[in-house]
Image 1: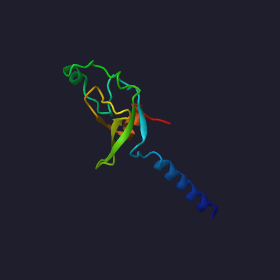
Image 2: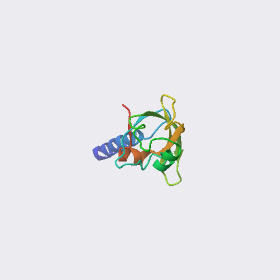
Image 3: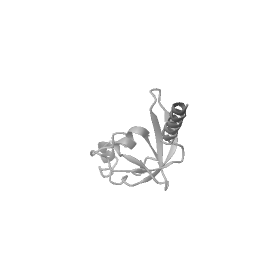
Image 4: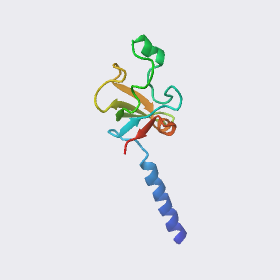
Length: 116
């Protein structure tokens, strides 16, 4: 009986821990510095596209931006993509209002973090 109780208690804690990792619309995140020179899981435009539009070809202007989850998209393979919008309402690089990101992979890679 004790083993059954502890097993159920452990499973309950596991479900609670997994449930807290799910994104919700309105969650606030921070865009961090990428591990390489480009963002792999946050879909910012390529540097040559920024140059063609007359912008400076680097991602320094987005580092440290506070963003809000605007929409959640569930993929067929079980991945969760989120649509990010800047909290202050301005545009990314002067022309993008929203940006798409793979939630789990970008958090794991350190490209975005949850604002506490």
